[in-house]
Image 1: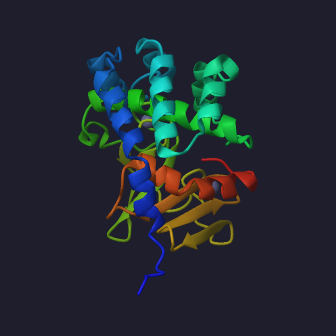
Image 2: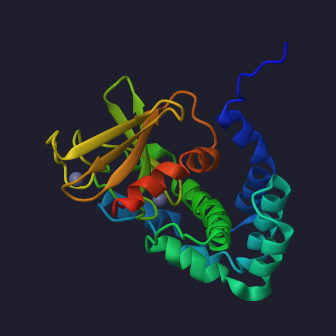
Length: 251
Ligand SMILES: [Zn+2]
Ligand SMILES: [Zn+2]
C-alpha cells in the first residue's frame, strides 16, 4: 500500500537547503572580519555592544561574489528560477542595499523576486556576522549581559529557545549569538500582563508566535531540543514573521 502520510515539511526543507548551507559555511570559513577582539570584550563588560555591525561587514570586502554563490545555490534548491536569478544579477537589486535594509529592520518584501534576493543577502550577512561574533568569544563572554539587543552586533533577537520550562535563551536574528534572557514577560517592554501578550501555538512547526500589543514586539519561541540549522528554522517559520508583520509588529 502506498503511504499517504505527508513527508514532514522540516525534513524536506532541510534537504532542500543543503546546497545553501554549504555555501553559507564556505563564506563563513573564508571571510576575515576586521575586529579588535580585546576591545570588543571590554565593551561588552562595560554594557556596550561588542562591535559596529556595518563596519565589520564592510571590512569583509565585496559582498557581490558571495551573493552570486548563494543565488546559485538557491537555484539548485529550486528557490529561484534561472530567469529570476539572472534578473537579480543584472543589477536589478543591489546586495549592499539589501543588507542595509535588513540591518535597519525593513519588512519582508511582497514582490517574490525581491524577497528571494533579500533572503540571499541575509544569508551572506549572517555568515559574516556569525564569524565575527564567534571571534568575540564563547557565550560565557557575555554571561552578565542583561540587555535585549545582541551583545555582539546589537541586533534584535528573533527566536527564543526554552529549556526546563523557564530558562529562556535569545538568538540574535543577525549573527546567531545566544544569550540568556532575564525577563519573564515581554522582551520589549517587560509586560507580564496576560491581556496584552498573545501567544499563538503552531504545533505543526513546533513554534509559538508570541506577540505583545503593548510595545508591538514579536518573537518565535520553541524548545531548544531538536533545533536544526538556524537558516532552516528561519525558513520554516517565515510564515510566522509574515503573520506578525501584517499585524504591524516587529522583532
Ligand atoms: Zn548579533
Ligand atoms: Zn511588550
